[in-house]
Length: 227
Image (cartoon, rainbow, N blue to C red; front, side, top):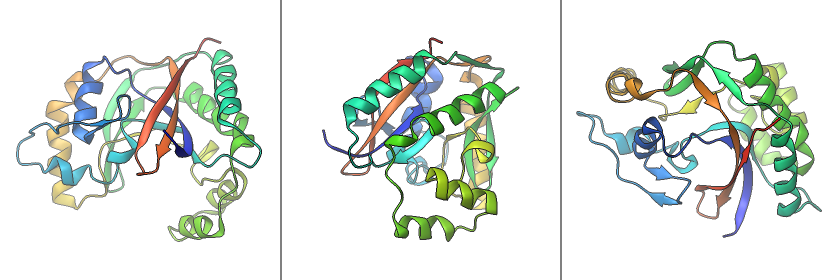
């Protein structure tokens, strides 16, 4: 399969019950590269609610999607990811909770996130030599959202506004929703997903992802955090 961009994600463990539910909730299994049926959750139009994040799969971004820079290869990126993970310890958090981030819903970590933020920053900085710089069109699209000076500086240096001090770990569960839909969807997820969420929550590996030509992301390889 040919990939147009790569990314480093936290990809939840496929065998966990909460992962199985949340994967079907989104409707795309990035581990198997297949569409999956949405669960029936009351009156919620799950397909509509999850339309925007579906192609990315169930994940938290550690290093945002990037094109390979000129002269770099997939094999070199693969080796660098393995080396990075071998020098990083696993991360333990108190748990996950369903939260609102503006107008969309996501899973957010509970407890001290310092080690998690350090891991994400390491991914962004260590692998940045593989990232091709964003085009002027991409820069303009990001800036149209309205960035703080810090976020704009991140965009210029790292290719994405929300990294390092602006990073907030989250596993996206919906697109932007109107207030009634947001409330109803959050209540449904509290009923069906929240009881399955892990406490404590542990990150034991990183995943190299590839974006296929149709825009969907696929899991290429997992790297155990063994530092």
